[in-house]
Length: 291
Length: 247
Image 1 (cartoon, rainbow over the protein chains, first blue to last red):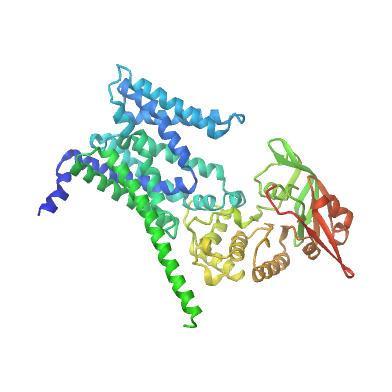
Image 2 (cartoon, rainbow over the protein chains, first blue to last red):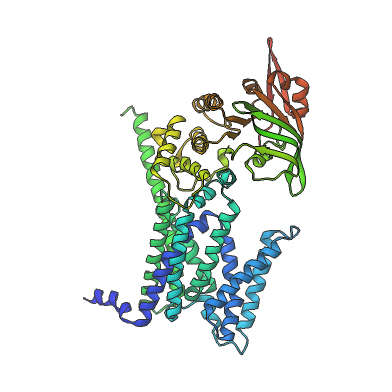
């Protein structure tokens, strides 16, 4: 009974129930999307956008408008600034992105640390799943409602481009548009998920699930499903851990997500070691003339 | 009827010409061997023919959308797709990309895999196949496209002899079906088996029958010091000393 009570306790509290719902909804949407972010090698742009949207969040907090609006505007400005800076070939895309993102992050921190700022910088940086509102939950549900059908419709072109971008044109598909579609979904997911996990930790739910699945899946559909399941599971375990240990909820969720990647790597190495042992045993038998 | 036609075409990147002076006309059912050194413009020509690159000057036209078989090392071996999934990607060329693939399309993809001799590994992961098998899967994807023009970039590079034989016999089958086949290669000696030879080295050096295009002077203009001619009795063996890379 004690164990059952422990498991049900968070669901009895309104705050924890919202947090569990938020990580479940975000886990489904961001977990599935993480497969495409990793497949299109967009982890670095994802990190850049997540950090670059901080000024938008702070300005929204200062003006008293919903953080979701600020996050959306922040992603838009960060994307435009990175795209503009990257056009200068003398600087180079990576350097330009690093400079622009660091500058925007610094600007966000400057604004957040001003005496007029009502929101704590920590909430914006590390998020607070326990503080999500009905609007945040509706936004996360909306992300699934819009992103799900979009990913379904784009599934075949995204597979073709991720697998072999050089041939996409001869198949009548624009590799640039496919990449832009994933970037657009990434930007939207960032704007929504940053409420719960903050600009520094949100990346965990957008990268770690796919990294944990790695080469275990046999098809993109299964990889997306497994990524979503890992993200939801890690989110729920993180909230329980936070409630049980009294740790910060956002950081707990992010840590469990990263732990899932470490576990996956260990499992893969053990599996490879197991296969190697089987192969060595077979080779040994063959050497000994056994069948 | 010409399936591929070029007139004073100049191709390149960012305004910089990589290949100039293209004058081509290739009819249906003909095969063309594209020869050239590293950076000579072979891949650039193929990218322009797929529509990925617009000519900087002149005109370049292709009948329909060509099927393109790139080198296997351009594909992602860690992407979780089966051989059948890859062949099915060829159905995207027919449009309606937003719909799931139909049963008839899956049948066509499977038949194409069977045609290249890989019907028994249709469900195998692409990344776990041998280099020759992967090349044949990519050719199966091109067959699914049912294109009038098929472009193959170094299709025999690094493939096993069985795969090479199967791929070579496919060239003849595609020609017999009235398709135009363009194959880029470094194997100068294999060029004699094609209807036409196109020699490139930053510009069009020659475009003619193998008997005329494979002369010593043309090959020296095409490859410069990269070409080695070995006298072996009454037969000359020509070899290119460098490895291929993009352009």
